[in-house]
Amino acid sequence: MKAGRIIDYIRRNGITSTCYAAAQHLHDMRVDLSYDREVKRRIKNGDGTDGAEDREHLPYEPLISILVPTYRPENRYFREMLRSVKRQTYGNFELLLGCGGGISENTNAALSEAKGDYIALLDQDDFIEPDALYLIAKEINKGASLIYTDEDKYDTGRDRYLRPFRKPGFDTELLLSNNYVCHFLAVKRELALKAGGFRSEYDGAQDHDLILRCAEYLGPGEARHVDKVLYHWRIHDGSTAGDPGEKSYAHGAGKRAIEDHLKRNGIGADVTETEHRGFYRVRYHAKPSGGDAYIMHLGAGIHPLGRDNEEEMRAYLDANPGIGAIGGRVIDTFGRILSSGYLRTGDGGILPLFRGMDHHMSGEFHLAGLRRKVDIISNQCILIRSALEDCMDTDSGRMCEKIRKRGYDVVIDPQMVFVRRS
View 1 (cartoon, rainbow, N blue to C red):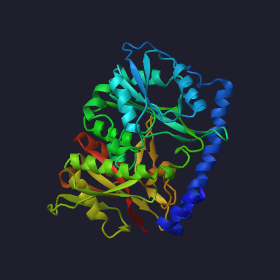
View 2: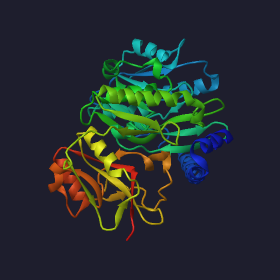
View 3: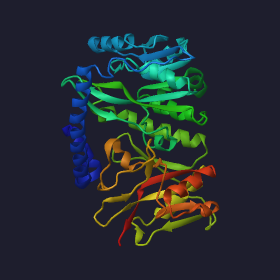
View 4: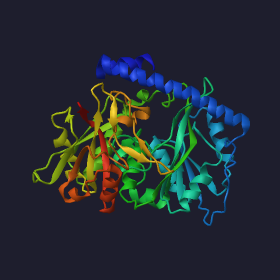
């Protein structure tokens, strides 16, 4: 971590929080070293880094317009970006460069000339894998209107690949905390235009703003995630990839983008930035509602750490009619996470999120502390709508399936902390 970032973090959050952030940073560095070795091995062996994706016939080969907003690009990085586009194994694309204004203005200039059915967003000094467009086109053939991929960072000075971000599925709840979608993003051109294109007053968070507006028009299954690192965000002197703190103007823009989304949807809430730059917390305004609208279930020995936990969880369900139940995080008396939501794996297993981690840690990309949709929340710490009380079950997975069959999602809020004392 750069000295300036450490001082800024201490000033905003204090010494204790900074120590936990430093411990998280050391963990991330160990992940980075392992990841770099893995990527270098694949490059050496030619394993999956040369566009050798198993290709299948695509019934529909849409024209994809790659939009690159430019501003005084450094020649060698710009050429490498162009080479990565030229190496694409999918041939039906066009590349458009926008210049002469701010980032949104330049992107809109390229968008206005785009002929493609879809647009894809690429920064002037980054680069993509050869099979990036092909894998996006595969998702388009499955009916996707918005597609995003995994990404990492490439440190030019030290020739290192780091910070692989293997992203969750599309989650509008998580988008209210951070633009985790980011790169590589492709959107149906018609959808981008319907949403209003890029807005210069949100420069720095213009993609986040666009994604939130596009999400308001998406139907079920229209947003797709390609779980493969296809985009490399370059770190070099002057870039923001290595130090997002250098892009401080973007944090205010991200906050305003979320506030605007909530306002468009008639939701009363306050948005604040968390201790991590570019990450946000939405606190919903409490509404007068019947005392029996929701029921809180807590297992034996489980008690809230926060005095207002239940009130805040009620306000959340009031503001989000599509959510059937919200779960809190349960920790033990040593501060270790016992329960913070669960995901189902592809092989039918269940993955407990962040179990055993100190609850002060934020996890990779700070996901451990963010409100999000999950497959399962624990029946030992749950606020559920009274109308769904009959879904309660001794098996948490079965309980959440019953809730889903009634047309509702479930959400975990790790900031609602409960402790099990027995």
